[in-house]
Amino acid sequence: MELAIYSKETDEPVKLEDESFLAEPLSILKTQIENYLYVSKPHYADWKVEGYVLELDDIFRFYNLLVGLYIPKSKLAAVDEVLQSMWTNPDFNYALTYEANEGIAELNIPINYVKNFNEHATIGETILFSENILKRISERTA
Image (cartoon, rainbow, N blue to C red; front, top):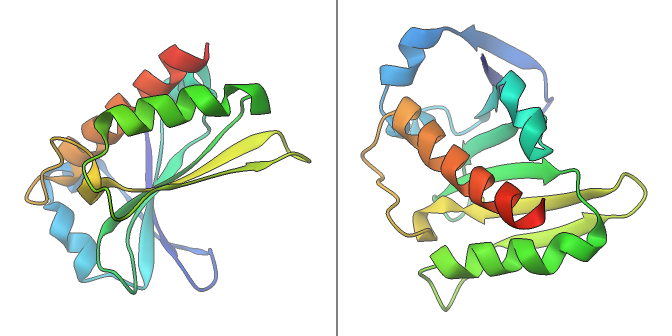
């Protein structure tokens, strides 16, 4: 597993984290708002994902899951169905766009608005929560 803190401004690595970082509270991202956490595991390739970002939004102060899915554009409706099935905020939505040149569906998901999100979770628990979202999407877009 790769766990690394990157600068939002430069996209340069700030610090590589080890397994002990998984026990830290998610709220640690509030104290590092200028940075984001990049997470990658070898089996993510099975989900057509290289890795993803967890960050605290600078303006709205909610937690974001940012990920690129290597799927055909024809699968966007399936991604939308999965996300709608777990969405809790009718007044605010996630962003789902498609970069045709690279064949990537780009997702920006404010995970605070996903059913069963726990703001008081650890980094490890939030990674498992995020992986569950990605696994469900992968199953629907296979």
